[in-house]
Image 1: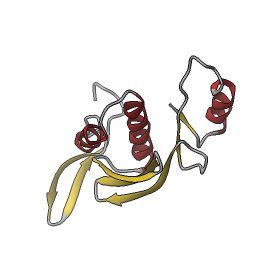
Image 2: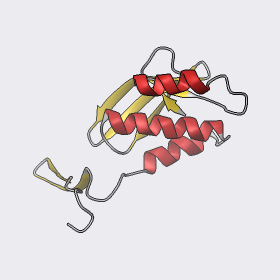
Image 3: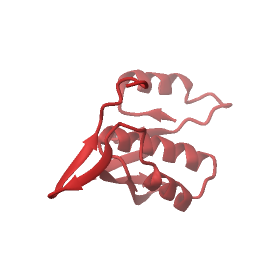
Length: 125
């Protein structure tokens, strides 16, 4: 599973795609990605992600915000699909993943303002 959005990764894909012992799948926003990210829509502290997979559009929710998390989730989705994991299981797992402690972690809400802890610079702090 290789990103189609970065030149170094694209070079790796070119080098290994024809190797018979490997199954290479690409993902990303690039038009030639095997699994293409069409849209990432922020929804508060979650993101709705739409991809094309096997010629069909699939939309799922990632319970962490940001395009980078969405693209990581698509990489996980592609890995799971390549291993035969059912799509509904993958979508459920991605929806329930909340990220690591103290990285964009919702602590609560007061007077309509969400309080988010995003300090996770060092594991002992």
